[in-house]
Amino acid sequence: MNVMLDRLLLIGLAAALCAPALAAEIPRTKQGKPDFSGTYDVATLTPLQRPEMFGENLVLTPEQAEKIAAERAAYLAADLEPSDPNRSAPPAGGDGSTGAAGNVGGYNAFWIDAGEGAFRVDGEFRTSIIVDPPNGRFPEMTPVAAKAQAERRRWFRENTGEAWWMAEEGPGPYDDPELRGVGERCLLGFGSTAGPPMLPVLYNNVKRIVQNEDTVVILTEMNHDARVVRMNGEHAPPHMRFWLGDSIGRWEGDTLVIDTTNFRDETSLRSGTRDLHVVERFRYDSEGQVVYSFTVEDPNVWTRPWSGEYAWPRTDARLFEYACHEGNYALGGVLRGARLLEREWLEKHGRQGSE
Amino acid sequence: MRKIVTAALAGTFALALAPAASAHHAFGAEFDPNRPLVLRGPVTKVEWVNPHTWIHIEVQKEDGTTEEWMVEGGTPNTLLRNGLNKQSLAPGTFIVVDGYQAKDRSNRANGRNVTLENGQKIFMGSSGTGAPRDGFDPNER
Image (cartoon, rainbow over all chains, first blue to last red):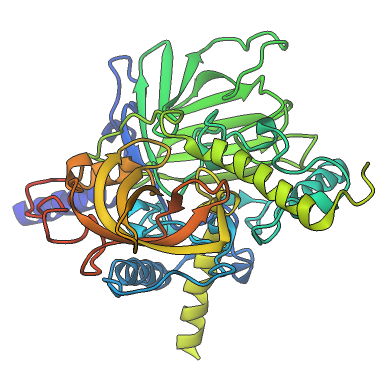
C-alpha cells in the first residue's frame, strides 16, 4: 500500500515538474502582478522578416538552430583571426561590401553583439520575429507608401565616391541634416531599438525594465531612450507628439499590455508615420522566459496590421550610458564630404544647364 | 544534398540579417572608396564615446614627419560588457589600420581592420591590450 502511495506521489511530482510554468511560479509584485523588472539582452540571429525559403514555417528544428549558431560562431572566429601585419591598403574603388558598410567596410567583429543564435519561444526555435502575416513578412504597402519607399530607395546607390545626385532632379540625399535618418542624427537609436516596436539590432541590445503599480519604465541602451508607460492612464491630446510615442499600460490577466500612439511624422520604425499605433504585450512563456510581442498598425503605410514576437532573455550584463551626441562626428563628416564631392562634380561636369 | 541545404539555410539567415546590420550611420556615406589607405603608428588617444569610438594614432610618414589620424570603431559599450575599457588600448601601442579616408578629406578613416603590429586584432591581442580572460568576470565570453 505504501509503495503504491509512494508511486502516486512520484507520478504527481513528475507531472508537476513537466507541466508548463504555473502562474504561481513566475515572479510577482506585492500586488500579485507578474514582475518584469530586470535587465534583458534581446540580441538574436533570427531576423524580423522570415527568409522566403521557410515559407509559412515559423519553427526551426533544434538541428537547424544549432547549425545557425555554429555558422555564426565560425564566422566571428574567422574575423578575429590575426591579419597579415604587412598588408597593404584595401582595393581602390571600394571593397565591394554592401549595406551600411557601403563599399568601404565597417569595423572588426569584436565591436558587434548581434546574438549567438535563434531565439526560442515556448521551447521552439523561430524562423522570424514576424508571426502574422503567416509568411512572416511585412504585408503589402499602400500605393502612397510604396511610392514614398521607392523614392527613398533612389538615394541608396552604390558608394562610388562621386556626387551622383548632382545629375538628378530634386533634392539630394545630403542637402540638409534633416534629410538624414533619426539614428544618424542621434535623435533615436537605429533599427527601432527603442521602438515601439522594440527590435533587436547589431549591438547595444541590453534593456532594463523598472516597474511599480503606476508606471513601467523601459530603458533601451541605445540612445539611452527611456519609455515611461503610465498604467491605466489616458493618451495625451492628439496635438502632443513624441519621438517614442505616448504609451499607456494595462493588465490583461498576467499579460502587461502597452498601447502607444501620438507619434511624430518620423518614427523609429522604418516607414512609420504619425498615425502609427503599436500594441505591445509582455508575458512569461511555458519555460518561465519573458516574451515580448507586438502588433503594428499604420493605415498610411500597410494595407493590414502585422504582428511579431520574440524572447527577452534575462542577463547579468550591465546596461551602460550611451551619449550619442558626444562622439557623433560622422554627421558633420558626411555633410562636409558631400559638399566637397559636389564641388568636384561641378568642376568635372559643369552645371549641366542648371544656370 | 543535405550539406547544400544546411549551408543555404545558414547563408539565408546571414543574408536576412543584412538589413538589421545597419550601423548608427552608413559608412558608405562617410568614407571614400577611391581613397584606400593603410596607417601604421602608435596610439596617442582613445575617445571611448558613443555612437562610435575613435582611436587616434600618430602616423609616421616616409619623409620622417608625423601626422595625427582618427580611426572610427564601433560602440564602446559592447567592449565594456566584455571586461575591456579605455585603458585596454594603451597610448604608445603600435597599431596597423587598413580602411578608407573620409570623404571630407580630413585625417579620418574607418577602422575596417585594426590590428596590433603583429597582425593580432586589437582588444583580442596579448600584449597588454586585452583584459584577462581568467574566469573571474561573470560576463566573460
